[in-house]
Image 1 (cartoon, rainbow, N blue to C red):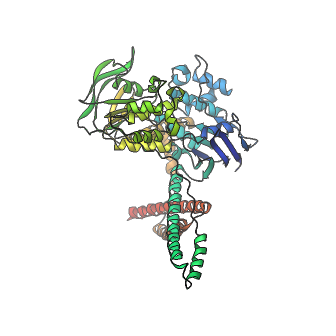
Image 2 (image 1 turned 45 degrees about the horizontal axis):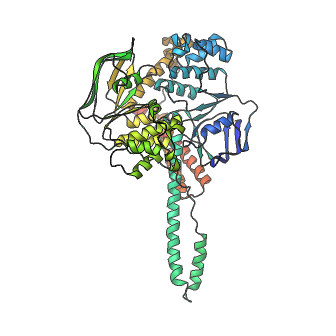
Image 3 (image 1 turned 180 degrees about the horizontal axis):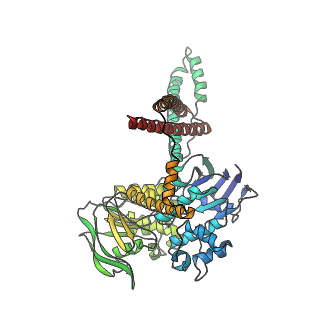
Length: 596
C-alpha cells in the first residue's frame, strides 16, 4: 500500500476565516474516500491545493513520484461541432477503438458518440468528460460534487464504474447515497481539522453521534459528582471534626474534569409554510403535449396529483423533466391539452433560474421580510436565514454581491417563509450541505401542502417522495409507488445491459455460459458433514456474540477519542463477521431442510 498524498500541518485562511488549521491526512493508493463537511468549510479550497492551483499559508502536501491526478472538469473543453468520439481522441491521444471501449462503459454509443456534443444534455456531456478522464489512466481521481445535475441512470453508471475501479478516489459530495455506494473511508473537514474515519459515511455519522452522546453522559456524571462534593465541602470545611475530610474531598474535586465538547456548528432549523391540509386533486393534466415550438418532448399526458402528495419527477437528463415542470407552472405554454389547478391552490416555484429576477439593490433581510407570510416574527425570519447560511451581518448584504448559490438559497428561504400550499421545487438540494438537505427533507415531510419536485439526491428522494412521475420516451407516467421500487427497476435495467455487454465482449453463447456455471457447482455434501459445520458455526456465533458485547461495554466506558475509534472499528469488524457466520448458518439450515 503506497501513500499517494500526505497533507502535513496544512493551514489556510482568508482574512479571519480559517479553513485549514494545522490539518493532516493521508490518501493511499487503494482507497476510495468520501470527503465531507459543511458548505464553506474549505473542501473545494483543499482540492485546489491538491491540484496545485492554490498554495497553503503553512504546511505542505507530499506527493508520490508516480502520482497521476485525474480531475473532473466543470468547464466545457469541447470545440464547436465536435463529436464525442473526436473530443475523446483529441483529448487523450488514444485510438478510436480505445475511446469507444471506455465510452461504452457510460453507454456512449451511436448518435451519442458520433453526433455533435453540443446537442447532448448536461448529463450526457458529463459522461463524455468522465470517459475522457479515464482515458488518461489516473491513479487518483478527484471528483468535486460529481452527481450534481446527473440523472439517476448516469449516477448509477458512475457508481458501477467506481466500484470496479481499482485505483484511489477522493470524492467531495453531499449525496449520502452516492458516497455510501462508492467510498469505503470518510474524510471530514470541520473547524479547520481533517478527520479520517476508516468506514462508510453512515457509520461515520453514527460514530460522531455515539461519541458526542458518550462524552455528554460522562460529563453529566462528572458534574453530578462535582456538585455532591461541593455540597459536602461547603457543609464540613468549617468543622474541626470534618475539616480533614473536606480537604480530601477538595483534592478529589480538583481531579474531576469534564471533556470539552466542541460547540455545535449551526444546525439548520427549517420549517415549511404553515397551511391547512386539503383534499382531492391538486392538479390535473388532460391530453397534454409539452415542448418548444415544433419540437414535441412528450404528449398524451393525462394524470393528476392529489393534495398532500409529494410527487418526485424523475427521468434521464434530456427527457423533459424541467419542460414538464415549466409547463405545469405556466412558465412554458403547452403545445396541446390543458392543465387544471384545484380551487384555492397557491403555487410557489423554486427553479435554478429564479434568482436572476431578484432586485439587485434589495438586502437579504428586505427580500425575506417582503416574502414572509403576514404575522411572521422577525426571529423566525432570522432563524430560517441562519439555517440557509445567512448569519449575522450577512442578512444586510445586497443581492448584487451574492453568488449564484447564495441567491438560490435566498429564493428557497423566501419560498419557505411564504403561505403557498403548493411547492414546485426544481433541484432544491443544490447549494445545500448534507445537514441542511436533511433539515429541508424533514420540513417537507411535515408540510401539509403538496410538493412537486425534482432532485438528483437519492437519499432526499427516498425520504420525501410519496409518488413517482417518470418522464421518458415521450410519455409522462404517474407511478403511485415508493422510490425504492423505481430505483430497483433502473438498477435492474442497467445490470441487464451490462451483462449483455459482457456476454457480447466475451463472445460466449448464453447456453455455454449456463453450462459452465452448472459444471462449476460443487458436489452435494452428505448430511453428517453439513451438521458438523453447523455445530462449529454455532460455537463461533456464541463466541463472536460475547466478544461483541464485551467490546460494546468497553466502548461505552471509554473517554479517549482514539481508543474509542479503535473499539468502534473492532465492534464493526466483529459485527460483520457475526452477520456473515449467521448467514452461513441459515444457508446450511435451508440445505438440511431441503433434504428432509
